[in-house]
Image (cartoon, rainbow, N blue to C red; front, side, top):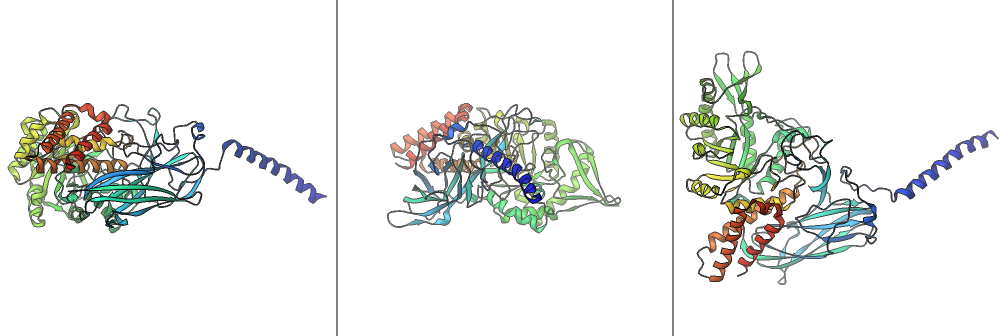
Length: 598
């Protein structure tokens, strides 16, 4: 009896719990399925009714690369299982394929089948890459620059990370984009190549999509040979912190290598180095430490340890970034400088203003010694002393001192245009907001002097920009704007200044989400980075067509080239085109296609 009584005592609550769980399951629908991406929850709610019209099973269609598709609702697209794109030899082209389902789909595996033309010529499977798009928390532009509160600025999920998973799940009531990248080898024969993308899963039958690529008889050179001057500032210190490895250890260098190689593949020209501690203060989550140790000896003499500087520069060059070495900075924020005092074995921080005797006494020994070291390394012709957004008086004083002391050193500067000093600047980058109609002519004059002119966007610019909530086409538009203005390229202050948890939350304490980095740990590329490369390739196409066809005697070619130039003039004269970047670049690409088809 006691045994039966105890069993009944356990049984009644157990049955009650069972019916509660059963009722809960009936109310909430299918048990959530882990996608495999470790993504954050979606702050935005969506009416589940939008999924009621979705047929059972896995759904799919090609979309456009100009849209970030939401995770929590089915995409509003016309169902397309076949897509045709065109490419030059040597070009990297992209497509976006969308998968969605109202029910759990397990172990989804995208597979690319090789591309072949009618003659049996192939674009090998190694040229095709399929990456699922991963979601990250973002916010909104709000007031742009300035401290931000997650309590007052709404957060959202944005599709941005191009992940490395080859097999994943699609939970019920969710969408998963796939980013398809096709790298056309330079030796590819012109023609129409057809291939397929097959989507396998354990939950559904295989879905097949066809992709056709028309390869034109025009060639883009290797990224290292592109004329476009790309300057995205690297932050090696963020890599060590995120991966929890010792700074400048072999493990750290091996993590930096693929990150720098990815950047070189976009045509990067500049190596970002720090020659003083915290040249921009502590504005990033991971401040920049000096790659050169300044040492004050007991007798007052200066010594300089270039070991880390040489290590990083050599690594970047080995990865394919070898055109220019930008050294930040002789005018750091706050004009503070740190050195190691040999007597106390402590680091001392001092302040020195450009234009003072104290400043020149501090910098003169370094500049002389640095020049000798650079000559020994064979890097003197690649060096610029770089600074950003400094006031005119500081720049005039620094420039005058530099020219008197080491006239071989070039200067790079991003910020406002000042007529008084602009001719002294070898590599000048306009702030987008200060580009004027006269900037095109100024860039032309500077090019005649063998000087570089670019432009940049930053936290205070709503569009075009590269935030994680920015329309992807704006990144492509940046290449078109450079071409329209006659600029040599584009600068962005942060390639990988990662926030605390970049794979989940792209928001930062002071600027719109995504402002501090283009790519993710892994390294993983992003929609923004891929679309920026697309715009750079378009810039190179425009340059090649203008140089090749501007003296053509063919009236039809001359007419189409004039149409393209007129379109670029429309971009130059109207910043407003950036607000509808997708339409603008679609029109421009159409003109290029028509021109090469003649």
